[in-house]
Image 1: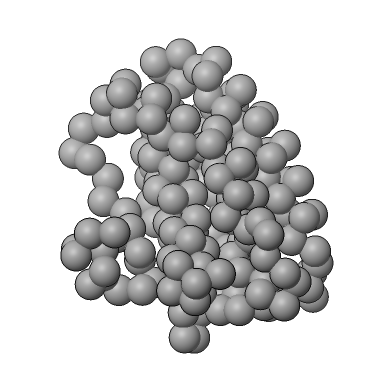
Image 2: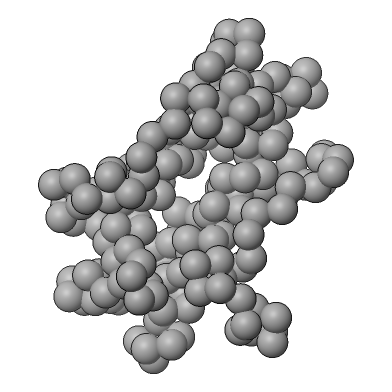
Length: 179
């Protein structure tokens, strides 16, 4: 870990998302690879954590490991649907959602394995979809009700960052607590 990452806000262990001014095919390829790699990396970061450790917050006032994993499943499911809408409609308006409220719903107590299995299947389909897109598809987009317009390519880069971001929450917690 570099001195830079050690001094960052613990909410953003890899730093905040900073989209590039221009998105290149290499950046897209790397982002798709990040999405492809997340399920295995996430599973690796969680093994062999005991159940009680799943209920440990990654930082003071932050979500528990369990909430993080369920959040990734919720967020990435939503992202895939938004991208599919962008690919099948002309700049549709997509809703936001209250991720903090989602993290407090009763299903947050579900076994982490359920969301891991969902993430594995979801990411396999997502990557398959993305690998089949033409250059024109990447420029399509949606209008996020809260964040404004977003192209498919910019959404994929955002969710690649999101994958690394939450994975780092878990790996940094394990390192800090020497698990």
